[in-house]
Length: 82
Image 1 (cartoon, rainbow, N blue to C red):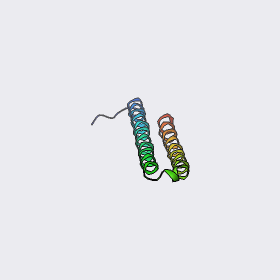
Image 2: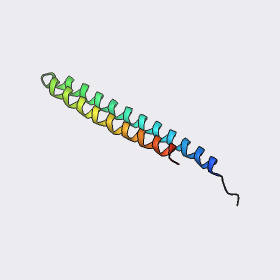
Image 3: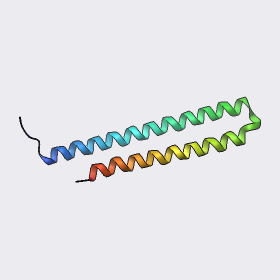
Image 4: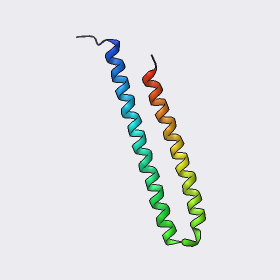
């Protein structure tokens, strides 16, 4: 068996981190999109509850964005770790 050197493993780690960060961004975008779609549908069904629906959806979207930012930072920190 041929042993891989450290530079090959670092290249694979960086590629994995890029894929992980991309998947995290895609997942966050899909989640926030679902929140927006559900909020629009809820407002269309009950216009008098628009303020409560909008406020809740903004809070949920902010939480998803925070978690996805944390995940991207973790994946990129793993890529630069030695």
